[in-house]
Amino acid sequence: MTDTPITVKTPARIHATAEVSPKAVIGAGTSIWHYVQIREGAVLGENCIVGKDVYIDFDVKVGNNVKIQNGSYLYHGLTVEDGVFIGPRAVFTNDVYPRAINPDGALKGNDDWQVGPITIRYGASIGTGAIIIPNVTVGRFALVAAGAVVNRSVPDHGLVAGVPARLIGYVCKCGRRMIQRDDDYFCPTCNWSFHPEE
Ligand SMILES: [Zn+2]
Image 1 (tube, protein in one colour):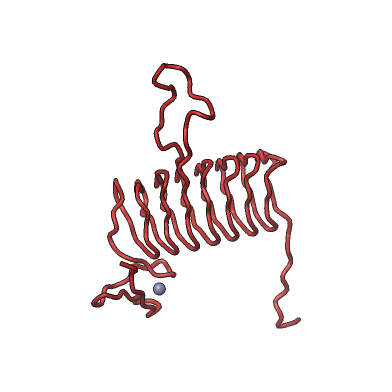
Image 2 (cartoon, rainbow, N blue to C red):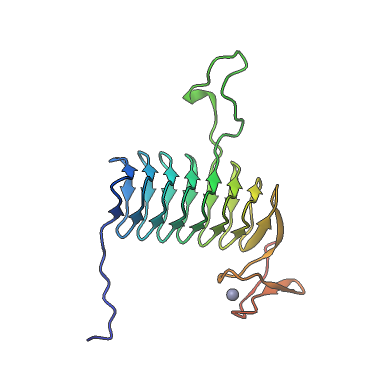
């Protein structure tokens, strides 16, 4: 016996039913479950968990220690930083002006639309069934409530809910809602205090 923890880097575990492009990069220790599709150019970091039926589009970037729950769709233009939680059936959109056809009636091609990027910053959480609209950044340790439709950026530690989502408070790194004290917020669980930017 030894008191020193032993770190063993395991290779990625990919279920036989998952379809992972040979041009995707999957970090060590990452688990990819049943019927996941990961497209070319996607990069996933280490120790991520990708649940059943998740779709990760081409060139999507995902950091380390990210949990993506069942049935979420991560479209092109998305960047997910380390330590992010994505609940089941969350959708990250990318088409700013969604149309199948141009004004002349012709089917739109790859050059006929523009990608609106989305960034989910370190430690943030996206609730079940949330939808993120293009050109949005979700701040560090922010929390998007279940079912929210987020069409504007969320500040660090911000708690947003509703359709469209609005800022209703702040959350701690531990995920608990913080209590306002004058201009500051503090966590009753951690006693950690936070001063919002604006
Ligand atoms: Zn806390």
